[in-house]
Image (tube, rainbow, N blue to C red; front, top):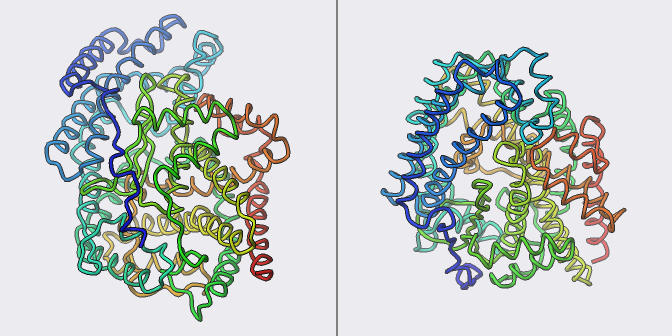
Length: 593
């Protein structure tokens, strides 16, 4: 079995010395940031509406330095903890940095609150000046939050209590889930390892893995249910204080899209749940099963899953990026050559994968749990896409390097598409092409339809928690099964064990409302890839310009430069039509095979 084979990633650990050569330097940065924040407050408190353009530029440069220092410390503490969540000393350091960062933020919090209240005519005059080009979109975006802002003392209280409140609960969730071990054939395995078995060709392996995973979640059901209830109530309280009209309104603001744009996406995807049923009925026939169960969804259609060593994954990913644009290949190479990746599967390491943008003065870091599967190669391509995006956008500076979640997935999903196309082009047989294509559609089902179904679950639990009070484990399970069943439309049998599978998903807690951004990104990338296929010579350069722009403008403006209209409701239907065409291609390949 693949799990028993060494991948070559066992010693692939990141080097955090680019952040700090020694942990002592972290404390020095925190102290400097704290003092600088105090000086900032002395200079600018109660003066923001009076600042001329030169003073505003100077103030923003000062504030940028404060956040840069605090952000560097926070990045180091988090990344150190993420690879050893069971290490008490690292957990203590993370908490210390979060508490120190909250104190620093409280010193400078007044600036954004005062800026939001600057009269519109004066704000427009300042924003029109070229001296503020580096900060214009950030400042414009900040003013959208003015109707939902509290007084400075109230905002400080929320920040202070957040450290020991919601942030502490999030950390407790991550450590609790990370500590669960799953029994499988007389061995104890991590979440990453047990979930990887759902991609095995042997159905008995998949079934045992699913039941083992459920057993682990059930054992932790009581604390996980309580954590969910607590954080749902915390969000309801904060939304109520800010007079936000719905549980998702703050996420739409942060994502820089309107409620109508988000709802158009959700409505479009839920209206095509028939594609989910159509695809899984095809998969049932391809797998020659009388009934497709939840643990069969990611089964490979080939006889056995291909094993990819770390070297294979590296070469394949670099080749794909290099062939698209040499600059992307050069940046991706640095992640491997300079130890910006942590890929080993080790005890206590945070599950899943991410790319952390760190701060503009350093570089991103990528975390993986590499087990040698094709999906892991796609995950590597995905996270490197994030990393390249973050690396290029750093030139925009701390306030405008980051993108909203709606466009944050663009580069990552596009990177996956590049790797997939290279794999597909190298496969000449109909059987092999069918296996690759259905593997891609598996991912698309998870990225588009499953994420929107999870958005529907989120909507249900937030609404129920606010209307009916604390939810039981059974109620969570009922809402989970209802929203998932609606998506599958009878094409997949969801076992009773599946009722618990809501409880391990971190996005629900860490970033409520996050998940629809995956569907947004996938459908956007389908459109962008279509542009690339129609103009392969011109597109790569313009695409890199898009990534380098970071969050310096509204999403619809940035992607509009590549010919995509995010404001058109029909845009989403076009992406869904592309998915339908992929399913049709798979059906044709199956008929031929």
